[in-house]
Image 1 (tube, rainbow, N blue to C red):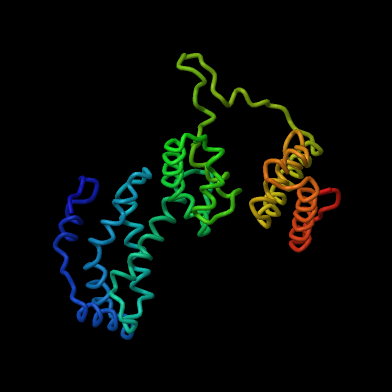
Image 2: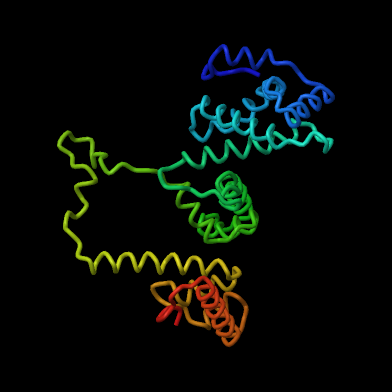
Length: 291
């Protein structure tokens, strides 16, 4: 393995000079650590697989994290694997350790991607590390077929391919295509240019204004929570009928979905009832909501 100089030379030499363990030796070391808490056995076992940890860390350099930090996180994952490894299951330690190393690196990358927390659920991880790849593939397929390849049109297909809710895809798309922006950055290259912070109105908000904003944020979060309970067709109808600036007619939605006007109305009613049940079950105050 070639290193790009971002790692300490001594550390790199130690990795390259680490022994290669056969299955029997590996199992003996794992048993010694599990049963006797033999730290020398643990050190020998993990040192032998530091090469694997560094190799996996190098695959995540494109996310902009320092290589030394990635290797450190990979090493943490390697230690977790050694702690939980069961040598009696007949699986090689390297096979087991891969998953812990990868999980540790992914958690680190997502924590440091933005000052805004990206998320840590399995669906959010899948989105974060696969969104751009899947979107690019779908764009190529759309262009080859001569159809609309815009991101807005393709997001439902990304959700279907990754098996995650569309609202999660829409949220992740916004976070990955944007970036953290300093309000102290100048608006122009001029020396006397104002900072973006200067555009923020510096007026004290009254308690009523603050409460109104907080209530709006709460209602939006509740709405997103309730939308998660709907299938793709139900979400489409609710968005077009209830969440847009202008509500679409039952007739136009029926034509799009190849359904009768009455059937669209029935789906809308059932979807609203489903959302109400979710909100009520979670103890949300829904008076005046979803009418």
